[in-house]
Length: 332
Image (tube, rainbow, N blue to C red; front, side, top):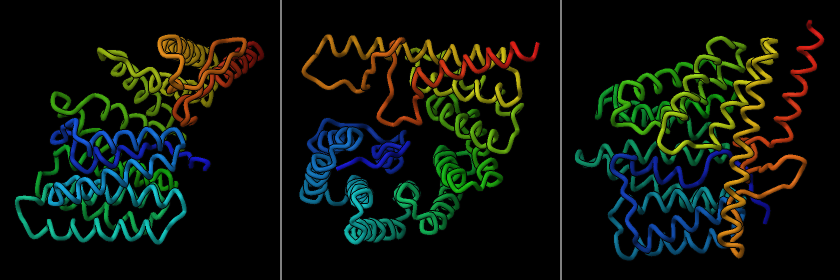
């Protein structure tokens, strides 16, 4: 079965569900099956994904039915069934998850879980293009997280960011911009306790939203900050870095700053070459295992991830650099 392309992995529902501060991936059968199911989903192996995620669901139902892992499994199954266009089954899983979330609301000690669960459920509806169902759940989760954890909490930042993502996909850029900025402000203030990856993700979303509104000056600043923060980390996320340079190049190009655009395109190209080289090493080490990044041998070593919008191809970056070089020469 052909995999439905999405820029957001199924496994993010797990992280949103448990909250990244509370979530500790223990090597239990449930975690292994869920993780393997996510990997299969990412690679378009929907039948295997279904087997693994169903196994995880049965495991938690049998051994730990009162844990938050049950809601996670139900939502993951619901999203998978939605992708497979089995809407009736998907809605059944979502309904089961909703009932558990509602029950948690009566227990004050689990209201924090409830806010995270609501966000995760809204994420599932949003990723399934059911925006009318997702929006009120996001708003409820945002209100609940604000009342329980405070307006400056990590959960508020996460919910605001995900709602902004949805608004951006629906081209509601004004609403999305405000929410991205709210999320980013929280994550910047709490940079000591919130992973840099979360802050970078919000920056990328905000920059894209600003670009859609032709607010190029502001978008450029945000992207430069994202590149600096990403590059500063101990383990640079090369896929994100390539995407950031690509976005920055497009901003420069839109402003007719062709010299800077050419440099940014070439920077993205260099990062792609590093990714391709890394994938080559993985293939050499374990030739029987399909690489996580498919390789394409062209005039320049290149790669294109399964989720193409996340990591642009080297061919596209080279074309962008050539286009900017030609435009720069014409403007002289």
